[in-house]
Image (cartoon, rainbow, N blue to C red):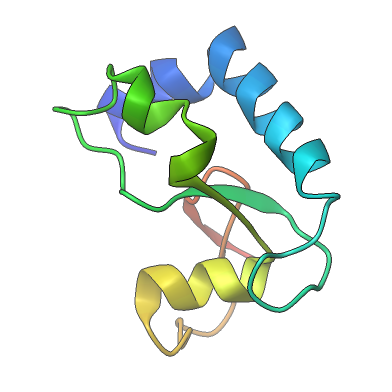
Length: 95
């Protein structure tokens, strides 16, 4: 995770927003209806917009995605190197 995003993703405000959005979407991926896993920002967060709650904490800018749909969003075809995946915060990790 990028240093500028760590504080936000560990914040109580984000955790509460993320958990409420997950419930709001009944835990289902909004693209494939599979089990949702990651609350994704449609407008990706940047150092410039992360402090704006209209972007970072707004349900209109969120989407609940499963791991596969989130991977496709960030890497097109979803083709990652062997053994790589994204964790709940969107970090590339060995899986």
